[in-house]
Amino acid sequence: MSTPVMTLSPIKAYRLLARDYDRSPNPMLGLEQRTMAPLFPRLRGARVVDAAAGTGRWASYCQSRGAATVALDFCVDMLAGAPPPAVVADVNRLPVPDAFADVTICAFALGYAPACLRELARITRKGGTVLVSDVHPEALLRGWTRTFSHRNGVIQVTHHRYTLDDLVEPELRLDVLEQPRFGEPEREVLAKAGKLAAFEEAAHHPALFVGRWVKV
Image (cartoon, rainbow, N blue to C red):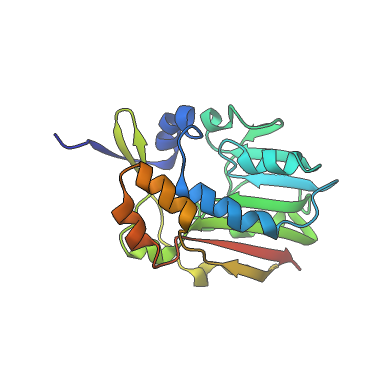
């Protein structure tokens, strides 16, 4: 019997996924964590906005290093586990003043809101840092999808196509662009899930990108 696949909008998908989102090992989140963490500037005393924060994992990371954070996401269910203050908000229309943040983060949301880079720039002060990650567009062209296992089947989330050439905003200067591939930690996760063949194919190509910009 085949596993049912549900194709849902982002808001409907994450309402269903919220309860178990952080409970299962996720190779993409692990790879992104290892890639993005070294790119942060000094966080102690900084004001950080975690836009499209999900469960607030980056807000928690920054708070633990002395930053004052605000977590924002369009899904109240995802924000239930985020550190306060956590606010329901659209990443394209953030309820944050201009030049508010020293560091602005947007992880795994560009495919849902491809025009959000302008809004991330608006809320970041001059000289501040913007960090963005998402599934690598080449991976999507190779057939990768945004899918999650769920007790009712497999959830596939609808998204927009984008390229690395789209990551341009006049007020932001690209400082670093990382394009990591799966490594040994991801091999272990996928092997335990019975998906070692998927690792062998994926390891030859970038799985995601992490960009760091400076507000000019």
